[in-house]
Image (tube, rainbow, N blue to C red):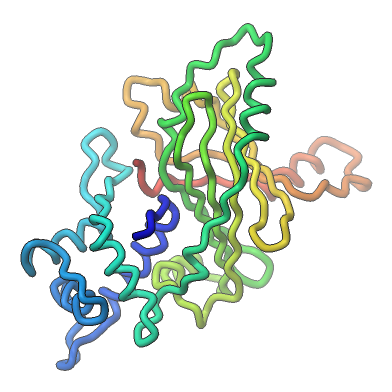
Length: 287
């Protein structure tokens, strides 16, 4: 049985939510979570939970989450047991269902030597010791914005924190032909292939500096192009207060290709160029 990372679980969760929300039974009624449990058993032979009601509730909690008492804005999402998770994925990717594709669950796994060397260099002879706990940042973030003639939805997953100040990062982007954020987010939530014009994945690492900054280095899984995100928040101030889990969002500056600043003869023009690549990501969940 395969082990799914945080961002892969997010894709499975969204697909299962869509299946529950839009599937109908033979009488034309929308599915209950018990109906979803029965379909998992029908298509894969896997029976989730010790009984129908318990299994249905486990599926609901996996999709909708449970309240996180330490941070109400960031819900906890219980992960099903490996066999149950395999059954859920088997249902969603079944040839008669096809709510989710195997391509959407393939993961780009970058090497870890380069970020470790970078962390060592950043810490070398630095009079500011590394104090920020990288595990504080584990979780999922999302942002959306107009892009060309449509709307782009971005998801970023920070996971597998290292004590030295490093996290594994995965980002995927979904482009939709719509001018409505509400419609784009709804289509993304449904894993709607018909209305999606592109699906792009990036993989890489996040590095935390002794100065409480974070930098994300990502590589396109298909063409190898690079993109960087530079955190604009001071992590110690953002997460170091009396209620660090109350943080609702983080701000990042994206940078890939250099800016054409030949016509930028004054500071406002440069600021305007940077503003187009500054994004506020909202926390969706925390590990």
